[in-house]
Image 1 (spheres, rainbow, N blue to C red):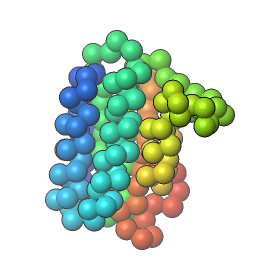
Image 2 (cartoon, rainbow, N blue to C red; image 1 turned 45 degrees about the vertical axis):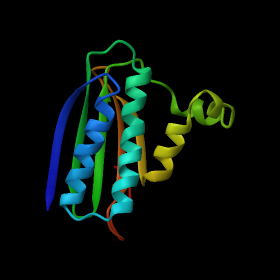
Image 3 (cartoon, rainbow, N blue to C red; image 1 turned 90 degrees about the vertical axis):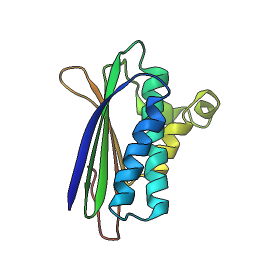
Length: 140
């Protein structure tokens, strides 16, 4: 089993529940456990909400979802200014007062979380989550 989709979304608050719903429907169709679906949905929502809230005046962003027998990997791309995840870690718990909860949630609800800036300047957040025991063991 392999399943995937890519969507381009407007940078507005309505795009977050939309893409979360698409992902939840795909995972549900593939009979993934409900608690795993919910946790992936929260992590995806946080990644997309960060784009909507912090990426600046963008027209759109992109979400890629790839699901196989063992894992779900989600990549969220944007052309915003980005941020330094290490700087957020260094200021915890003070950063929780100004944000930073989304980053903690994404870390807690996924097996792998990676931030990168691509050579063309686009930013990418990769979330990966095991769907079954013995699935994902290394960063995506």
